[in-house]
Every structure is written in C-alpha cells, then in structure tokens.
Length: 538
Image 1 (cartoon, rainbow, N blue to C red):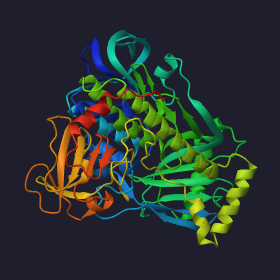
Image 2 (image 1 turned 60 degrees about the vertical axis):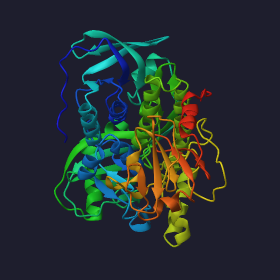
Image 3 (image 1 turned 90 degrees about the horizontal axis):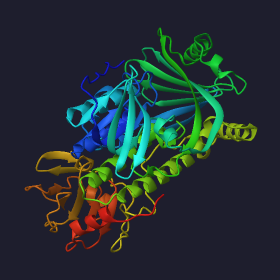
Image 4 (image 1 turned 180 degrees about the vertical axis):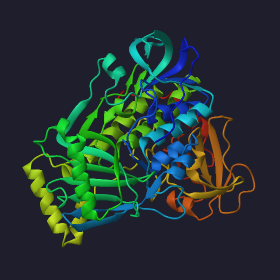
C-alpha cells in the first residue's frame, strides 16, 4: 500500500482561481495540468489520504500520455505491469486469445495494471512539485453558491470548522456521489444494470503472465463470470458475478467470499498461500450529465459520468476529461480565450461519455447478461466460439480507445485532399522522432501548447504567438530548434503527409485542422479564431 499523504497546516485561502472538489486521480491530474500552464488551484478532498483497494486498475496508453505531460508516467511504468492481451474461457476451455496493437517503438504499451491509489499518489506528487497546487485532505465541500464572477464555496474541515473560499471556477471531480452535483440540483441520466460483481484484492505470489483473464460459467463457480488481473505487489484483482437472488450485504462477507476465491484458485492451479486485502461490490451504470459546464462550475470524471468497468473506460475517460479541460480553462484564465471555449469541453466530453456508455453497455450485456434472452445469446456465442474462429471476436469486449470528437465546434474542415491520416477531431498518432534534444516520441511535445507540424525544410512563419510551437518535419537529422527528424518515416506515413502538408494539433493532442498546402497559412490567426469561437452548448 502507498504511503500516506500529508496535510497542510496553513490557513485555507480566502480566494483561489480554481477550486477542485475531489482529490482522486482526475482532480489531482487536472490540478497538475493547470499548474503546468501556470494556473494555481486548491484541491479539497474529504478523505484523509489516498483511496483503499485497487478500484480502477487498467491504465490505457492515452492515459499514460496525459500523465506523461505532468511527469507522472515514469513512476507509473516503474511500478505498473504492462500487458497487451488476454484470454477468455467457457467453462474450462479457452475460447479467445486476443492481443491489442503494440510495437517495439511505441512510448507505452496498450495497458498497464496498477492500483488506483498509486495513480493518486503519483498525480499528487506531480501536482505538489509544481508549487501551484494546495491539496487539503479531510476537508469537504459543504456548499456552492454560484454568482456572476465565480462561486462562493463553503468547506468544512474534520473538526467541524467552516471556511469560505471565493473561486473563479469550480471543477467537480468528487466522484459518483458528487456533493457539488447534488448541491446544484443536477442529476445523471441513463440506466443501471441489476447484475452485481464482488471485487476482491488478494495477495498471492504467481508466475502467470500479465493478461486479462475471463471465465464464463467456470466449474469453480458455476453460473458466474470471473475476471482476474495481476497487479503490482503480488496482488490479484478478482471480480466475480453473484446470482440475482443473493443479498449484496451477505455476498461481501469474508465467509462467503473466501471459499469462492479458493475454489477458483484451486481450479486454475494457483496453490501459493494467499490472503484477502479488500472486498467491495459493484454494479454497472450507464449515466451522464447532459452538460458538463454550468456557468463557472465544470464537471469531470465520475462526477460527470458513470460508465461500466468492462473495457476499462471509467478512470481512463476521466483522465481524458482532465486532458481536454485543463488547457481550455488555462487559456480562459490567462485571457487568451473567451470562456465560451469551455462549452466545447462539454460538447466533446459528453459525446465521448455517450460513446463510452454505448460500448460499455454492449460489454456489460455480455459480461453480466440482464435477462434470460441475453444469457441464451451469450451461451450460444460461447459454444460456437469453441469450434468456430470467426465467432470468437464476439467474446472480446472492446477495450477503451480515444474518442473522435465528431462535430466539435473546434474542428476545421480539411483544406486539400487527404487519402489517410487523422482529420480534425481525431487524436494525433504516435510516432518515434528525433529533435535537437535527442530521441523522443511525438506525444511528448503535447500537453501545454498548440503544436504545428509542417512537412518540409522550412516551417511557415507564425505571428509571434507564445501558445504555439512550430516544427519542421524533415527526413534529415535535426540540426536546429524546431526541427523534427522523422527517423523511421512514421510521421510521413501516419499523417499521410506530402511536402508542404501542415497539421495544427491542440494541446491535448487532438487535430485542430490540416492543410495540404500549408506554406502560407497564418497559424497564429487559426489558433486565435479557435480560442475566441463562440460555441453552442452541449
């Protein structure tokens, strides 16, 4: 288990540019990203330290890129367990072995398993290191009063004392039972499934490969579905479905949990001594707020949306919220953008939540069938998969991927014909590159600034905007600042680039627009127009 956090003993501030309700991984990542842009914030967290139990455990490549922008990627990789695929079994027979796209030159693998409390610790350390983030533990938001220029926030400490803070902006990252959401009278909409899963962390040494493992109707627990993931510190995360007629309160009692775990460990041949660490219960929810901006209050993570765990879209989508929101709010606070830019945060991330819910619902209906009809179809698919390779893809829940921002008000239509590559609203593909600083990956250039990529020997001029970094992508060795050597030809291929091609990439790594003949484009004007754009609400 991670070390405990420390609590500041200095008085709470009377004013803060940004108050973040919730010191989980999303809130702390938002705080650190804002600090990278020079924006101070105060984080209010009701708990006294980082979370207990594994909770969210699978970190996607996209999430690691975002954490890399705050310098939290290295400790995540040093501690976490990378994996690229998994196996599924029907009873005691394998029906699927899948692998996600991966290559040796990539910066990160497809997934890393790591307990959520480590993610919180590393994001916290990155935030505190900036000197611009004030984290207050054992303190909760008790009231929020919006007004024209911001919000008056009342917070209550563990000893019952109250304090008022004037906050220009409030970001609610306070989880699925969000106090801020409740105080503003807002409700999530959607549906939740009745099927429940017991979640268990156990400590047991194993030599098994790091894979996602799933059993449907295993002999160890007939009628159930069981998921297993290896984690750091010799921890297994085990999720298993309970029957509809089982009492959830009884289902999480150790005397009912431990025999089921032992039965399954016996079945798969894991004979080392083990002990339980944490037990909880879960049921899948497909819920979202219809808007994530309400005046000067913004919602992110589970406070904004709840998606099923299948496909690991929960925390990963919350970190994507953070990556989308931070640069936009920083631009507003610096006076570089109209506050209507934040409407695009709501539009883009509500769309992403609905896409995640759509895929998550399909996975849930397979992993925890809601009725007899779904159970019958699942068993038919599993039986066919035993003999027919073409059916096996139906058994594989789609893993989380970065969402395309379809119809975003920031998207600029293509100028010129492209026969591939990412258009506006898609994330820029990763590539191995070399600059005057040495070997890098393209994603390392994102996080704080707009990035312009000009495929040619001479980059186009920009009118002195400090918010954009202009690079010339060349086939030759980088000899000056602003040169990118496309060492493996990956950029030319993945961006479908020809000489003169220009891409403008947002700070969060998404394509703003692209031009087949970009030599004379005024990049600063393009970016300024995007920052000042008045957008519709979600």
